[in-house]
Length: 422
Image 1 (cartoon, helix red, strand yellow):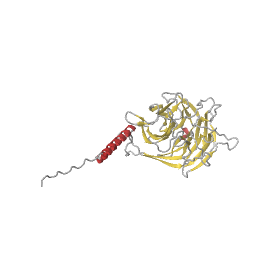
Image 2 (cartoon, rainbow, N blue to C red; image 1 turned 135 degrees about the vertical axis):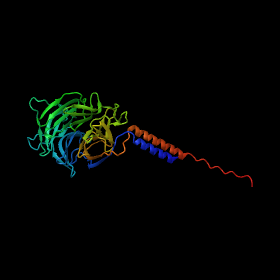
Image 3 (tube, rainbow, N blue to C red; image 1 turned 30 degrees about the vertical axis):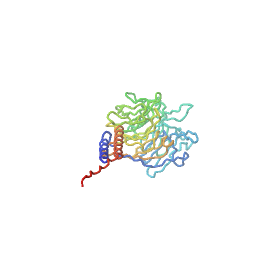
Image 4 (spheres, rainbow, N blue to C red; image 1 turned 120 degrees about the horizontal axis):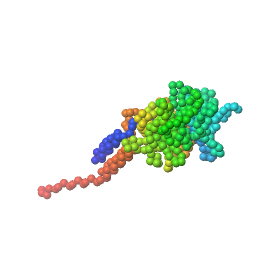
C-alpha cells in the first residue's frame, strides 16, 4: 500500500508541475566583491543607497555615483558625491573622484542621493537632480552635470536663456532612447517625489522640452526606467499622500508617447505575488527596485512595499515585452534589499551594488554580486502559487495515509484447525 501511494504522489506532482507557469531556466549569484562591514573602509566605496550606477563598456568597469548612508553606531547621516569604478577584469576598486575640488575653480556637484544618471556615449555620463539633505532650504535639485570617464572631471550644463527646464526633484528615473549615433540620442526623465511629468532632453542641442500627452503614468517615485528597443520601459513605483504602490509596466517612444503594457494589480498589502485568473503570477507592487535590460524585455530585482507591514523583497522576475508576461526566476536568492542598482554587463549577466537591508541583519551594502540568467525552454515550467499549495497538500495527505498504513496492526494469523480424530 505504501509503495502504491508513493507512486501515486509522484505521478500527481509530475502532472501538477506541468500545469501553469513559464519556462524558468537557472539563476546563479556569484560574489565579485564581498560585503565590507566596516563603515570606515579604505580603498573601497562607502556603503550607500539611492546612488546611481552605469556600465562603462569601453573600460570594462562599473561606475558608482554619489548616494547616502546613515551610520547608526555614531548616529551620523552622510550624503556622498564621490565617484568610484569597479574594474571588472582585475576585480579592483578605483576612486575616480573624491567629491572634493582638486583645484580652486574646479566645478563639483553637491553631495546627494535620489539622483539619476545615464551613460550617453563611450566617454560621458549625465547626472540630473537629487536630494542634498538641505532641510532648511530646498533639498531637491534640478542641476544637470556631465562627468568625463576619460579625465574624471565634472562640467555643469547650464540651461540656454529662456529655454524650459525640469523642476527640482528626487527619486526620479532617467534613461536614453537609443539612436544610430549616441550623440544624437534623447534622454527621457520621468516622475519623482510627488511628480508625474515627463521631460525629453536633446543631447546634442542641450535643450529640454516637456512631453505633453495622454495616457501617462500616475504620480510615482522610486521606480526605474531603462532603454529597450526604440524607447524606454518603466515598472512600478510608489506615491505619497495617499500612499500607494504600483506593479504596472509602461513603454515610451518618441513617436507614440506613453503606452501602458500592463495594469497595476494588487490586494492593497502587496507582500505576496499577485495571482491572476489564469494562474500566472505578477510581482508584488513595489518601489525602490532595480531594472536591467534583457533580450526579451527586462529583469527586475528586489525592492520594497510599505503599504502595511514594510516588506523588503529578494525576488527576481523577467518581463517579456512582446508577450506582456511575467515569469518568476527565483526568490530568496541573495539578501532582501531596496535602493540598490542592477546593471547589465553582458547578454545574460548582471551586477547589483549597494542598497539597504533589514534582514538577516540591518545594514547598508557595498558588496558587488554578479547574477547569471540562463533561460531554457526545455526546463519544466514553474508552478503557480495555488498549484504549489495544492501539491504540498496532496503530498502531506499521501504521507499521512502511508503513515496510517504502517501504524495499523496486522491481523493475527488464524490457528490451523485440528482434526479431532486419530
